[in-house]
Image 1 (tube, one colour):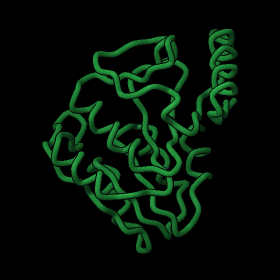
Image 2 (cartoon, rainbow, N blue to C red; image 1 turned 90 degrees about the horizontal axis):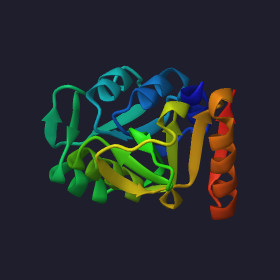
Image 3 (cartoon, one colour; image 1 turned 180 degrees about the vertical axis):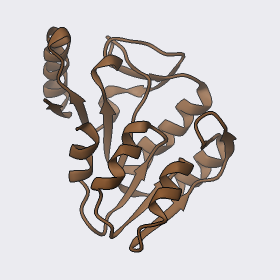
Image 4 (cartoon, rainbow, N blue to C red; image 1 turned 45 degrees about the vertical axis):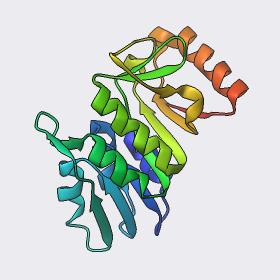
Length: 177
């Protein structure tokens, strides 16, 4: 449901970036076909190449075999040469201090490159990431435009506190039931 809502934010003709997360991959069936997609995820690129009206730009870099994606300084340089309407990404953790983290520095660098390329930066976040840490800091939450997150009764207090933070900082947040 996070992926479906995220895809509904994409308009035909837009240029979007999609990182190597499972949630961005799940957006594909819901995307309009007339767009340009910049990605580092081989699975996204190979699936979208079947869409006749979709242009795919596959970013180069070091192949990360376990995720079938590219990472590294070459990718960061390439992404630095692009501007996208919307950048969709996910990370491993959203800390209590409102910082985003991922598993490794080269992955975090890739995420920062995606974030820096977008007019609108959309963080796709399932509730399990809230209140956690991972090894390498990606950015502060205030560096993004929007969060799309599933609603979870077990952590309602944490989600309410996140909502209040986002309202103070001007970050749009959507909770999907």
